[in-house]
Image 1 (cartoon, rainbow, N blue to C red):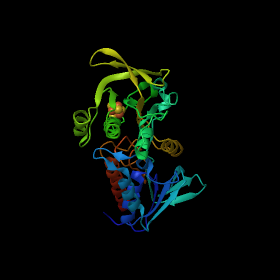
Image 2 (cartoon, helix red, strand yellow; image 1 turned 30 degrees about the vertical axis):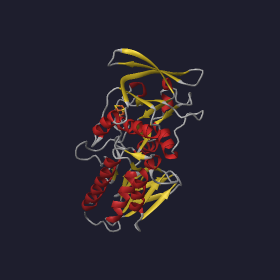
Image 3 (tube, rainbow, N blue to C red; image 1 turned 135 degrees about the horizontal axis):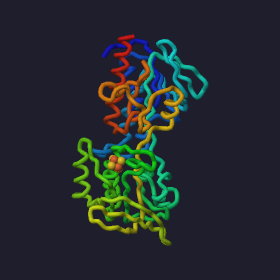
Length: 344
Ligand code: SF4
């Protein structure tokens, strides 16, 4: 890769994509400023416990990313949001939430994704019934090594609802979030590791296991852990007097409606363009697609490029992607930045 001595690059977003991109840019000789709106870097990875497909502890990924940004050429600034981007000749000006105007030779936007807000699917009862939780809530329970109902009991019958906020015209998200099927499989197995005698059900529309070792994980979940997969859509959730959840499902394989009593229900929230990314798109005239993620300049040859010279994309701000894909996408963004510097 070309050495880009002293070129200044701002990376917006301190999750996996932004941290990897910053590290690679610094190694190539760039002077990098990494802006993260939260008080700490690490994005969503820091909130997860074990990662699919190999149950790697997410702390290992966080440690790797922290090493990437531990470089003399990188300044990490937390608690700072990029409000808008402006072209100024060949430079780009980043207007920050602190009123600064930072000049840069190139920008990598790595604003990531937000998890779908499960309250928007009222019929599932998130925010109404205490024992309806999201996949992110469950991950926090794994981290604390304590899976409990709201009343302190250990749940014995647990359901997972797939496609919450994805493939759903009612919430204007027609796309598949790609990772929630395998996340459900991973979490279902993890529940069984914690609570050996639990009965665990996954309510799915299709099982989309399109990644390395995902299908094997799915098979293992059935054969080794006894996870029960029910093809059907949950139509309604209510609570009985004992705070057990009554879940109505249309079992589309058996062709009959089901009514099940569960102790806990986990909603597999999909991925959406982040609020920060949306704000940046609107303020800076960056194009978004029908799915509201950043639209790349070319779906085959330019997934890291915006339509504005000098502004590039890395990671899940362009589409749902897993950590492996995110790291690769960030590296590809840096290759495009280097190519850009060669030609200006
Ligand atoms: S990955 Fe699975 S759960 Fe997620 S949106 Fe696609 S089909 Fe639904």
